[in-house]
Image (spheres, rainbow, N blue to C red):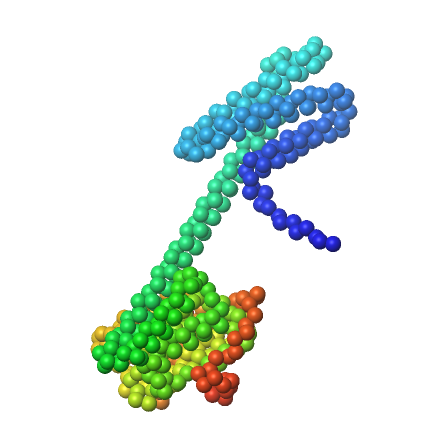
Length: 404
């Protein structure tokens, strides 16, 4: 048998409905309290008529007060509170007058008391009821105003974060296009038209693939690796066998969500500072595994590292522009740092390490957020098409934190 799922709605989702529910519940409770008090004191049942008339009078007066308070609540504090006190005094006078008049009609000459005496004696109850009603009315409305302002502020912060993420994501496209088109221009100058045409074709495929996702959206690691493969296809047109890659992606990590185009700038920097300056090229390893509740991703190259012949250009490798390198735009790793800070705040880790004998490693660690409905069916990627060899994956133990 199908079970209906009841979705609880916030009590103040409809302010009008919440007002009438509180109004009926409050005055109904006041009537019940006074009726029980009358019964406990042995008063006749006809006294319930008086209590009912007074409850209906208070209910009606409170409706008038709600209309007046709604006009006062948005004014300056002096006008709001001064007007509220005057209106409340007038409402208490009207309420007590009605109560005294009804009792005069009900008791007649049975009780020797003037209208003024009855008015003074009965004004305590209207003052208590209408005073409590007014305080509750203003408290609830100010609470709802604060909640609305908090929600509006939260939405604005979310929109600001999304806009900053989109800006940083858009920044990658010109950065990547600048380097790729520069390579195509070199091929054209060398009159290598076929490689240039092939690179343009692959560039269009890569851009078409990356433009599908929204700038501030997240993708699975499997999709990120697929995008990275399209980029490496372009770079292999330039470096051929000098560019050697190796992927080691844990199965559980494939469905993890992360900002799109997060690994591509890391691989691009590795190509620029490890593969390009060395005649024999370099090997780039990309690993990803789940460690507890965290996703750990590393990009490592076998280039010269900080202490190698490319020591002067390692400033660029860390994401800052170098005076001797005018080609780089210097947005690679700095862009990633900013994107991680916007997306995860202090809950991310960005570390780099360079071995004395060469090689450079970048490690990113973010909260593990799996895509539950995802069913990874892509085989583990490797440049040679063979299963990844776990023995070839270098264990990473970064020593210096630069991102958190």
